[in-house]
Image 1: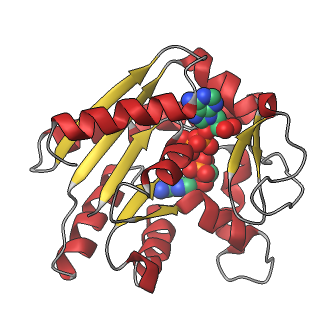
Image 2: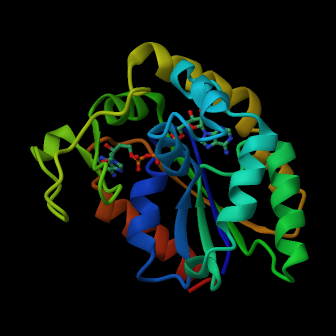
Amino acid sequence: MNIVLLGAPGSGKGTQASLLVDRLNARPMSTGDLFRKILGDPDHPLYPQLQVINEGKLVSDEVVNQVVESGIEEPEYQNGVIFDGYPRTIAQAEALDKMLKAKNKKLDLVFELNVTKEVLFYRILGRQVCPGCKAVYHEEQGYKTCPNCNTALIRRGDDNEETIIKRLEEYKNKTAPLKDYYKNSDTLLLSITVDDASLQAEEVNARIIKVLEENNVL
Ligand code: ADP
Ligand code: AMP
């Protein structure tokens, strides 16, 4: 099964992708995580083209599509992919359709996480990530090291107020139009709205599972 999680930065795509693996026959792929790995290696050929990330801008479609196209060849993705942060433009959505078609596969579902701006800011400004296993936490959880692998948690370089404003602008202009793109396609489009910052990740996950069950996806 191939699924796209659609939502603004901080909407919980990565968090929900990890919680969904138990229920879906698919593995999460975060383009942001793939890029942060490359940014750790200044000799990588794509390193210069990824510097835009620190300015809150999108990486070029050409580079993103190239990274995803080679990424989905990995054995772990052969049953299916939960795409987190891809596609982010219409050109990427078209490229994904082509990539899957070439493998005799298709996109089965787009799930949109609608989260209010206040909740997005609160979440991103408190986000902590594990550089080891890529798990994501919030500072309110009070961890200094990752409960999974004991690595010291860090803040992302692009999780500051100035960059968040730019990332949300990029989302509104380039990624939000994907909703209409998928509405006009054969792919099932489902969504939930989270307007309450106190709703915990497991509760959001339970709501997603309910919508998936109601629509016979599960
Ligand atoms: P995205 O992948 O969409 O950018 P993340 O999954 O990284 O979003 O979540 C952003 C931040 O919000 C992280 O710090 C994460 O721990 C936190 N978070 C995600 N979902 C919830 C939730 N339901 N309640 C509280 N914090 C959440
Ligand atoms: P994320 O981890 O999804 O928040 O992504 C972090 C940053 O990586 C984004 O702000 C973009 O600069 C870049 N990025 C990740 N995925 C994409 C994509 N599909 N298209 C363009 N840029 C991306």
